[in-house]
Amino acid sequence: MKSVIYETKGRAREFNELAINLFTGCGHQCIYCYGANVLHQTKDDFENRPRPRVTPDDIARSAEDWAKRGETRRVLLCFVTDPYQPIENDTKLTRQTINTLHTAGLNVIILTKGGHRSMRDFDILTPKDAYATTLTCTTPNQSVIWEPNAALPSERMDALKEAHRLGVETWVSFEPVIHPEYTYDLLDLTHEYVGHYKVGTMNYHPHGKMIDWNKYGYSMLSRLKALGLRYYFKKDLLKEMGLIPSQFKQSWICR
Ligand code: SF4
Image (cartoon, rainbow, N blue to C red; front, top):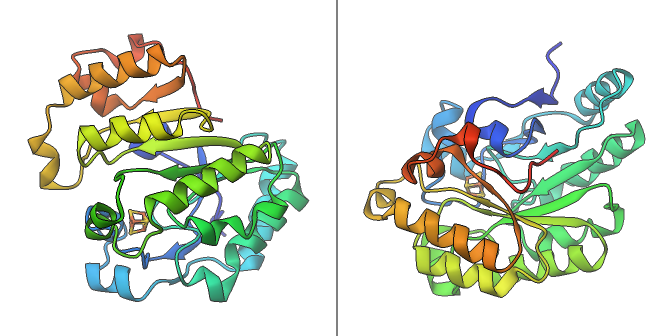
């Protein structure tokens, strides 16, 4: 049987090398989401009928297999869905998964726009885990246009702050970028409690063509360096900056 914990490929591998996708679909309904395309679903099915994709038994089997092989890399929850979208309130599948992976001796990276919803599982995260969120907008008005059912930016920042206070490693994905000015503001607002930033572009929405990525990339690089922060620049952005990814010195690689 195919393992539900899998090695990522391509752009996803720039986020993390191991992942599980717990759900098919996502009720956050971000307008730039590429999940439906990746999974060959209609947008309607993806957005309006999210459902568990794996069972607790699948997860336990897979976790034991990876642990037996001596795996030490953390497992990311999730890429093409959100572990704390609204249906997780009913399924509690994410909490179960974290417990199962911990029992097997594996650690997790939570990547979510669930904000306060995700904080209810902070009691089971440990300093060997990590907590990450995507930040795109600074105000509620901007956020509900682009990510209608996701937590508002202030909630996502609350969750980061609390994870940091608890000693859990934190990071932020600055991808997609909706407006460079929003991202600059988000960096100023969060850098005291965020361990690392992943800096990318906007690949899957025509709005991305309106942004000068070269200018944005160099501006972000100098801001991150001036603040003494750790960063990972995505290959797509490095290409826009005229840089060769293999020669660029990243200050943080996720494991
Ligand atoms: S939270 Fe992620 S998976 Fe869910 S709709 Fe938004 S971009 Fe897609």
